[in-house]
Image (tube, rainbow, N blue to C red; front, side):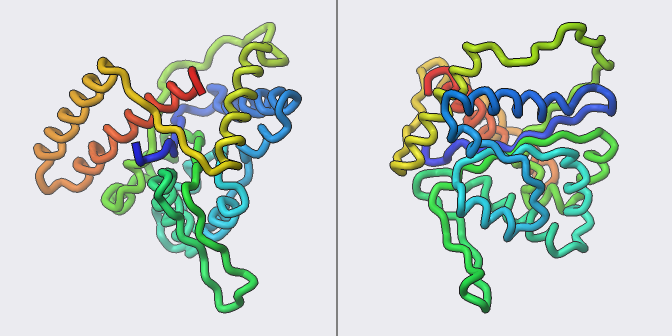
Amino acid sequence: PGSGLNLYVVLVARSAIGKEAMHSGISKLISAAKERYPEAAFHVDFADYVSGPALQKACAQNPCFVNVAGEIGHKFLAMAVDKDASMRSLRKVLTTLYSKSGPDNIAGGIAYSSQENNVGSVEGVAFSLIGETTPGTFYESITDTMMRDGFMSRFCVIEYGGDRPAKNAAPAQRPPVAVVDHIARISQQAGLAAAANVYQEVSFSEEAQAHLDRFEGECDAAIHAAGDDENLRQLWNRAHLKALRVAALLAVGDHC
């Protein structure tokens, strides 16, 4: 409630594992869903944003999409070095947008000396990010600064440590019809809600609420135990919020 569902996910796995299936799978789903609901394409974006202003302009034009990023670890490395002004601005905008998807949140715009280049503020930006990288690149990018300012704590990190899977001799060329229909329906519901600027709050069952409350208590205890260790405090800082968002997104996926 009041938070919105923005989610940042990074998949960490070794080379030659098949991480690119994340991109091709999403592409196939959206291509198929477009046949039923053409505007579905607006909700997924494969652009490579190289600066904060570029991302802000994209959000001003389309305040409801997920950005699918390739080799996101290289961006993390560039942001960690902190020498490139464009990467610095991208990190700042990503940090800010994470908490700007609630109905009363406003993502600030950009003001230039030349007014025609200005970008207005946007209310309730539903921006999510999913990317993949290799372990070496990812862990090399995690600096004290990246931890202390809360940037890394915004990401749900999914690490796969297994071996390369056997070749699939008969891969599906098109997603199942039922899955495509479901994705198209969710996309259409999101489009209608965005067009009317309406919000639907996700409710919790008593069992889910109790389970999430227990986890919040666990997170609070871990933060207290961390004392002055900012890196450790940041690890637990948004754990409960991320659990809420993942649970809520799954609920929306089941019953949009």
